[in-house]
View 1 (cartoon, one colour):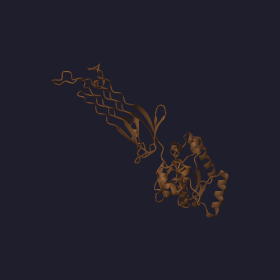
View 2 (cartoon, rainbow, N blue to C red):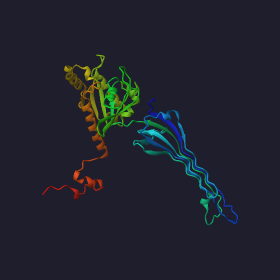
View 3 (cartoon, rainbow, N blue to C red):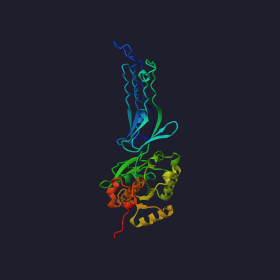
View 4 (cartoon, rainbow, N blue to C red):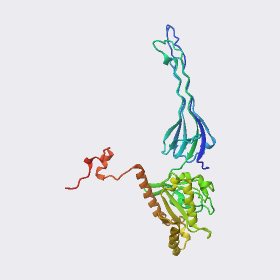
Length: 371
């Protein structure tokens, strides 16, 4: 199935039903009074985050979605039925924005999250609503309110903990297939990866994280060259970037340091916030470097690249060095999650009272020195 991460749709909530003007007509009821009911509410349009979807391809071809209008009110105190709502299923990570103004309206970040993207119009009042002591036979009614109509832009940013960054043929797809359940296409020519791939990396029982592989970047990607610029948005929600570098290119004239600097430059041009994310250097394809030359080549690369951060030496093909790397990644992801959620370490003696909602900052709960 083709990967689609952007689509435009038009939605229309249902109009409200009109109120009714009616009077009670029964034998022996000479002054029956008004009995016109209200109109029904128009149908709403909802969007739900569905974990079973990973693209917006359904909205590429079907672009118009309309909810049913409410029924009109009727006599005999009968109110109109509400119009049927419609629910649009979208992948987790979808951004819903106004197509005309660009304003972001909603972000579906939690599986099962439901938002109302267009409200149905309220039903009009029947003449029963206007009955009063001085107006015994009202002939007023109101029409139903129109439902909301919107033109929306849907943009998908995949939710992954770790993003892979690098030139084409740096070994990103081989790495994600070696450490996760993802099975991307792997070949010995550039731009094998044409769309993002997600893989779940299992570190241990109930210990895992999600890694995203995007098409390789080339110089000028921020201006539209190559394919990767179309998918850089998918790295914006990651907690860590892995800069994968081919340490043993087939062409001897290719300088890995120059390629790595070009990638960093494109990242900075595209988005300063993305550039500022934690980034680790992963030197790949060590299996193609003679054992006696590895240390010198790695040292030379780090020195010329002027890299001060973490460095990992791996071979995605043979899985050499992959296990320590994924364990370090898991620890980093867990630390970031705790930081984002504001989780602090709790003294085990007070775990139960904190679960009960007790404020542990109260001086009464301060640990005391043993007498």
